[in-house]
Length: 78
Image (cartoon, rainbow, N blue to C red; front, side, top):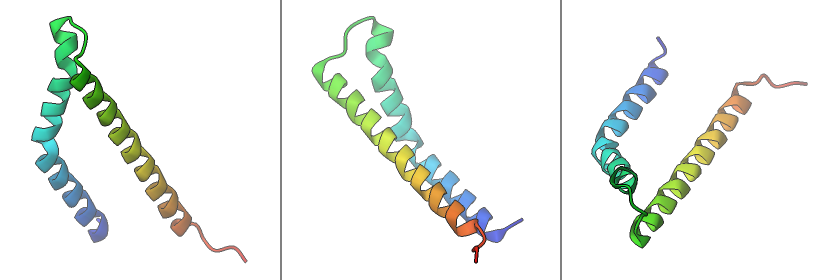
């Protein structure tokens, strides 16, 4: 197996594990109004919008990184 891939995969899993408590807390906060059958408070609404913005930014960042990796993997044409 590729040692560079192993290092990247291990690092990614470690970062996910560190972020897990925060992620679980965020999910519980987002689901609270739904589970309680009520409208979200203003603060909950703002938090949900912020979470969506952060997730969208992360997806865009990852897409850009993948595009750059694909460009680097393509052979140079003469």
